[in-house]
Length: 457
Image (cartoon, rainbow, N blue to C red; front, side, top):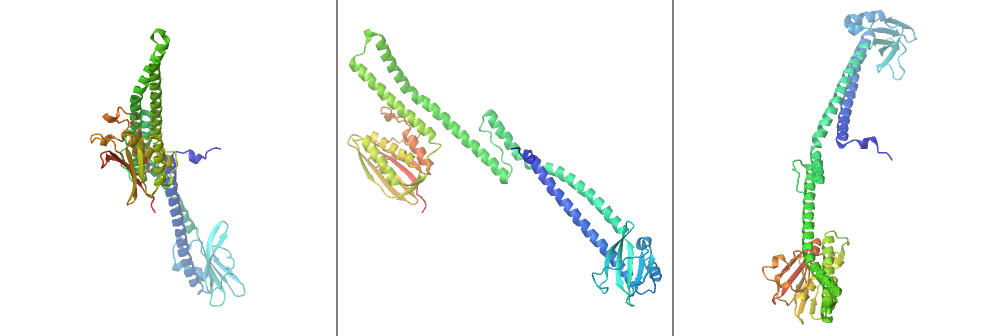
């Protein structure tokens, strides 16, 4: 289906056409109204003169005397050009003097007591006729050529047409200028977008000088560039950190595999059964850690684009499910849960994963037979999930960094983990409009708080 020609025009051309059309319509409308008002005024004056002629002629004894009286009373060729006077008796006898041999009978629409004007056409000329009653019961009709009025209206119409054409031409020029000026910020925005697409440089912001819709558009464009720049920086940092973290387990995995291959290729240097079993166990552990690391990387990268729909969720149910899963994974740690009511708008699976990561971290640092306490409390319009463990706690120097990607305290480097679990917690909680924090528990262990907004009642 072909696009209409109008839609093929540029925005500037369409704006110019609209401005020119609006001004042209205004000029033409004003000109037409002016011409109509002037025409009505001229004919009102013309009819008033004819009425005065008819009143004078009605007192004369004959059309010739009436015509003579009118010519002496209203001298001038412009006043008496084509003047005709006709008497019509009550019996229907007609006597005429003037430019027209005979005038038609007066129109029958109204009685003679209400004098009125009508048009008469003779040999291509147009006359204006006024009919009035005479004292003897007859009628007097006075007609005059309306050429002067028509000429005046013709000249006025010509000049109004010239003015209208000039107005349309001026409107076209002004419309183009207005379109160019109004769309200059859009041109700047377009140039900036093209420059970003060409150079991939996201720091090229636009100077916001306009206000209104254009200013909002430029501000939104700058905000979009800032968000894209931050997203690209985060992606680059994630890739760099991931490459660094993956390099160590991959190197260890490769070294162990090469050792097995070398041992199999050299019978005289065969590994003992215990060494071989220990090496295979190390390979299995490294593969599991690598799998977990890759899974967390995927969760962290895709977590910025949530695909799960949000829904009202009872937070206590989510925490309960996470506690039960953690109990089965850490049988040597006791979990005490004191949960309260509270409904939040959340993605249940993502939120459970965040709580599970906090519980896993607490269990990992707790000694055998240790206790992890999980509590919930309603605070104003938020709900707080608090997890305390009985581990060594978090050093003060590490507290500001515990939610950073791949950050691992010195004491944690000997333990399994990727340094991504708490980063995922912080990301998920932030996406739900809340915040996560870490501190030292009252008993000396670590404390993690997840604060989420409640659904407004």
